[in-house]
Length: 223
Image (cartoon, rainbow, N blue to C red; front, side):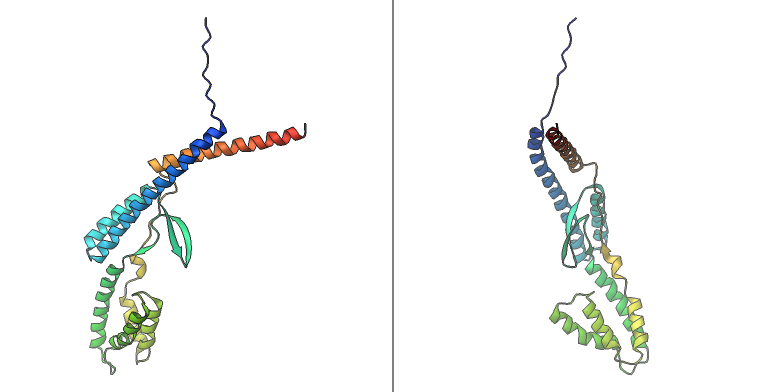
């Protein structure tokens, strides 16, 4: 009887390092492609918002959400002037949809205010006449605190300001309803996910081998 020889396959640490380098580049490329895809889908949402197409907004939001929830999307977002790494889309706003909704609500509020007996006339319009030029000059957006504070300051100059202010504020929808931020999983069963998993395993093996090597070297010093 001949003994069957066993094939021993041992991968050396330097060989693992050679494999690790291109793997890291591949991981970075796959993560970059996932990020680009997310950015394209998010841009489609914002384009639909600019086109004021509510049906298209809903459809593109679903596509974006489905992709982000099933892929690893690493993103860098601005957090009060600081760059922050996050998993997902980061916050973005449906500004045009909010403006349409807010304008409709304000028109209704103005009609109610105009129907009230007010010796100063349309207080909201008077305040807007003062604040809108300032907003244009200073680049204030629709939800900028400076613009809102300006409006409230002007409105409070007139009689019954508290009541009018309450009516205006109550008519405006919350900006949070138009703020979107979809988070992606830290790991997902995709090509990118499995490549990252292989990379992590190789890094762990290399790390363990280095630790064992250091321990052996130190033990030899005391023999």
